[in-house]
Amino acid sequence: MDTLLQILSPDFLLRDALVASVLVGLVCPLVGVYFVLRRMVFLGVALPQVSSAGIAFAFLVFNVVVGPHEPFQLSERVLALIGSFTFTLAATIILAYFEQRRAMVEARIGTAYAIAAAATILLLAKDPHGEAQLVHLLRGDILATTGTSLVWMAAIFAAVVFALFAFRKELLLVSFDRDLAVVFGKRPGLWDLVLYLLTGVVISLGVMTAGPIATFGFLIVPPVTMHLIAGRMLTFSLGAAALGALTAFGGFYCAYRFDLPLGPAEVALASIALAVVAGGSGLRRAIGRRGT
Image (cartoon, rainbow, N blue to C red):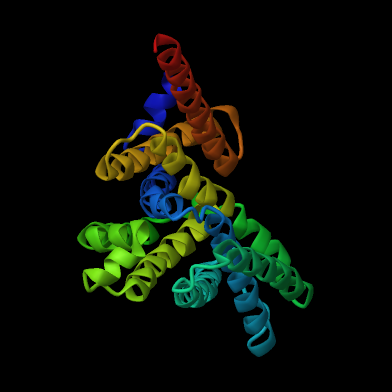
């Protein structure tokens, strides 16, 4: 209880990091629900890896053109964010273009992941100064969150959430039935691009803030959990976001209280929630079958 009161105190030293962690846990599931609806869960793995390749590329280019960058400085974070967003944006645009051809979707996403993973290793091999910094950033540099970066992060995430709800009907229609969307005069390719752009922003900020493990975990685990019990789309989205925020807070508490790595602690807690819900759903179905 003392640890919880300490975390909730306005004077808590890591308050900005806590808020940033909860924001990532809140917003990532709002994008992840569309991954689950489209049966494209693997995209949640591929895009964080693409983001990592973008960071490695930015470090290498800076090292070749300018010289070694200063580790653990604001300029390094800006450089990494530019590389991350550029690569993620390019990948989402390419995937949105090919999304119009529904065949071999998983193969394309898997190819993107393999190329990004190989590119990350090769780029780091050519940049002896970048490997340590990249490893540090990809573990989740959330403890380096400042008040200014938190304000910018909150503003960008607020814009993403507004867009997700403003275009909710179009995004849902394209995700559920592309042919019907065409009949209604919608342009599936355009709305795929909108969704992927929003996804790129969320993943870039998520990877830079909490690391790829936590980002992938929040993209997938809370939506999969709520998909088991939610009967309506609004309940599905809001429930996944709420579960993500709660597990982010709980994971931060466990990491702080028991001196654990933050990202894995958050994903582990979300996975426990998934196991409990899945077990409860399975038990309820078993009782229902016996009752009939």
